[in-house]
Image (cartoon, rainbow, N blue to C red; front, side, top):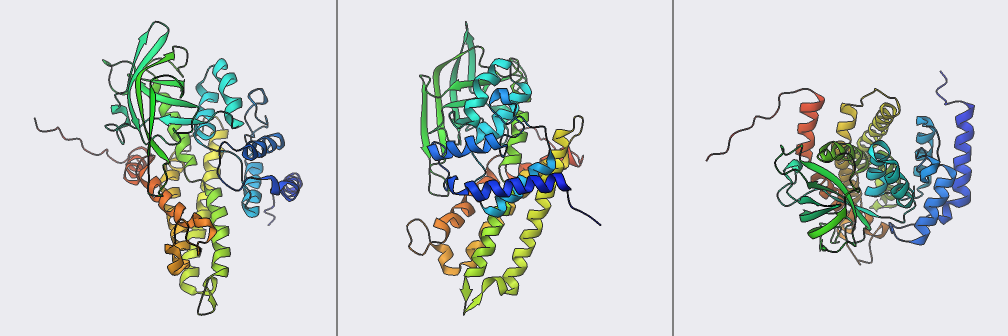
Length: 397
């Protein structure tokens, strides 16, 4: 049985391999969203169709027709070479696809190109102190005053707010409407007067999150995506994109390749950890899960590219399974290193510049953030499997 993709795809794979051989040294090594090297690399990837592949050329993308197999080949070869796949972040992975689907022509022209080129960094204004898992209970208010919205309130866990240029933000614009129907989705500049950002240190020891306060922030009326009061529909579209990108399987494949190398080099009593049957068994179980998630991503991608198809359950499991998988993967690496796995920050014995410890703590946080694993299980059971909804009990007066 011939399971090859055929000559066309063999040639394409050869092109990707050649590109990587000739250009991998230009790829940035860190995660600096502002660095010129990262922007130059992003531009090169777009020009060659290795990122932003299906975004129309008129908005700065490569403009290719969707092709699942080519997308998989790109992911496989970049993962194998352990080369940076380009800029990500909330603007590129979440807002851009939502604008392509629901934004006006003016919004697409104004925001998409600078976002995918790394010139416009975004943050997400969703969670509030009293509206986390129940996001529709948000209270940040937007009142229309002539041609401007006036915004007052607070957001929390606002990732990258301290470096963001713009924010996409959920606000309550119809206070008398039912909570899901009184929300609007606004875009505004983070330099607008009245915005205050206060960093929050997370479990990695870094300030990746923030509190964000709005005091009489004035936003032009036209900077709304969708109609007034329809922000919940926009929010659900963007949350779908978020769950797919919090722990992508292709990144997990890159990490497991690095883990295999680590296990080949780390030894106990002169024996490589890769040859230890207990550790090798744990590795193989994680490899199996990574493979399953990679095929699941293809199922989701296939449904997205074929109008009328609903990925359903396969889309719902990605956040739950992806974040827990990465936490297990990074945890195995820490176990493999033994006492060195406890090293942190400036310890001279760190492996991988401390990335294993940092990612382990980061994905512990993501199991909570973006909708906790418990919330994800409720979504899967109720919406995916059709099980009865969790009973609601009236609060005692």
